[in-house]
Length: 58
Image (cartoon, rainbow, N blue to C red; front, side, top):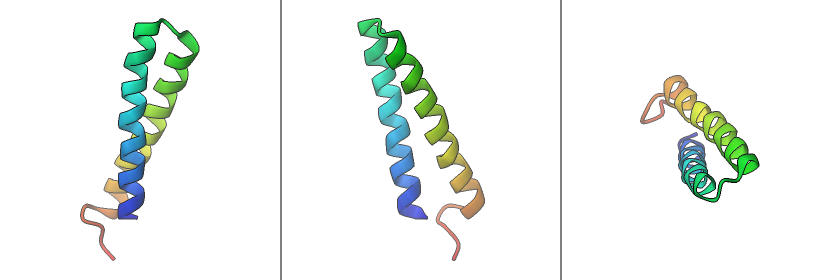
């Protein structure tokens, strides 16, 4: 689960970066999709930390 949390966190961070780039390009569809993916993967990351703890308990 620890590696899964790291991957979800990286995807969420890259989605936020993509959102800022989409704002600069004024691309509405990209803004919407990046925001949704950042929220979903960020939520998965937070819930994984809450459920498994950090560091994860076996």
